[in-house]
Amino acid sequence: MNEKDFKMNKKGNIQQLFPAVLAIVLTGALMCIGILILSSFQSTTYATGTTGISSNESLAAATTSGITLNTGNALRDGVCGALTKVYNGTANVAIGLGNFTQTGCLVTNVTQTFDPAGYSANFRYNYPYTYSADTTTSTAIGSTNTSLATLASTWLPIIVVVLAAGIVLSILLGAFAGKWK
Image (cartoon, rainbow, N blue to C red; front, side, top):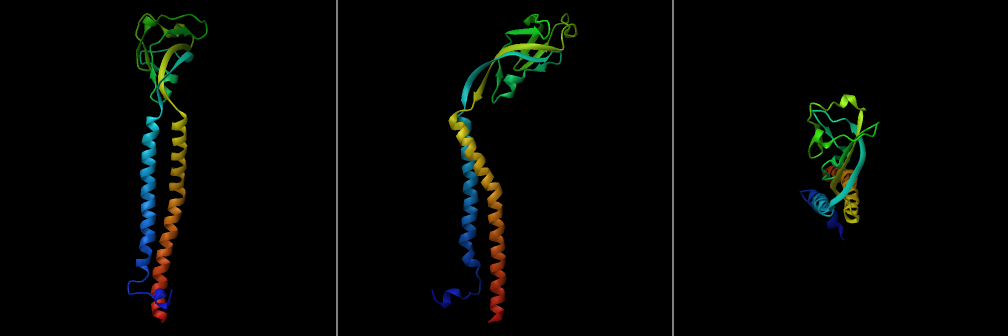
């Protein structure tokens, strides 16, 4: 390098900063695209149609407004199957399934003759359910996604601030260097 390389042109050092700014912007854009792609891959790697059975799930007695079955409803893509048995919570007495209707995970008391007040506060509901379970692949992709998101939310703003400070300092030093000569 010679002395000419260090002298400023009329535009200052801004032209020299363009590649750094472009690299940071492209890195941020690629990280965002990568996170979006990983998210869509993760949702395709779940084990769909995984089955389970909820035995004696203790919930309040179904009312005419209905209650929501928790286990099947809380899982990813959870679908509650038809009730198989309902028991009184304390007396362990089976309650006829004809007293209820079920829409998805919502169970409703539909009979006028069935009075839940005559039973214990909680019933025990039994039913099958299906859901989308995590796999080794979906867990690995989820971990990578979380790490990239942390990197993007923690380090990228710091890099942008440092780069902006460098640009401002470069402009100021370039302006003052021209006056000192």
